[in-house]
Image (cartoon, rainbow, N blue to C red; front, top):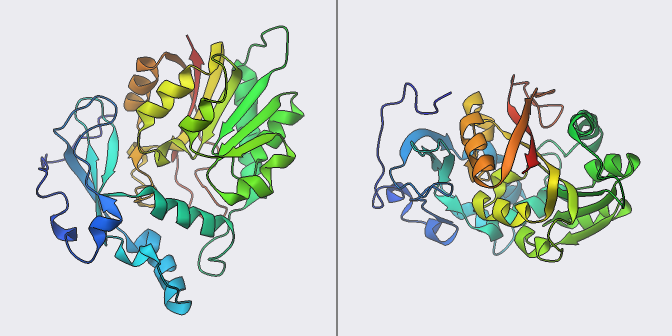
Length: 309
């Protein structure tokens, strides 16, 4: 589906993208986006705006009730733009928050700091979804015949996907930027807290049989740089499993400032084929929810199984 369908094009210029955010310290926590990460296009078209209070309101409420010094969240802009590239259909948010702001939020969210202000991360609910995802991997996976089968979860959080993969006989590895991975995921395999590209450099080319990224791809500043580095680490014939919000689902809850890029089927296919993968299946989204308390949205997520050429 064309993400630009039915939209009156509004070409953004460098001077206007941050015009309503130029005061109040916003430039310290976010920068404008002027170029597509996938194809390099610079004629970006505004598709939608996002009211930041929908995602940051409970954080602002928490710090109003629990004041602290040096909290960056107050300077977050109150409105964000969702831009689309007419060449490849990738969608991206502008201005883009700095990594330190987003990482601090996720550390605090996963630690339970905002308990009572937002839904907690529900591992039991997520395990049911991951069980379905593991069945999709098994459907497409071809064992290499000898040696250990290696599974990497990029953005492993508390390690539930690693747990299920270990139960299927994989030797598991995990990577994340949050403290939660060190506390929980290490029960199921080797886990390193660091930047994903730095993590990939630890391994020889072709080391992994399966690499998974669930609710992760949308958070990267450069999906292209991630996939270029990741592609080298999967063996020929190995699998890449992706789950990420579908921009074409038109769900406001996923068009948030913490999601730097969103794909639809067309941009995802372009993204993967450009980087050495063949899409095997766009699978059914089994839940339409991230947490059990969420409103169910049909086909909210892209669920993709791709094979390394």
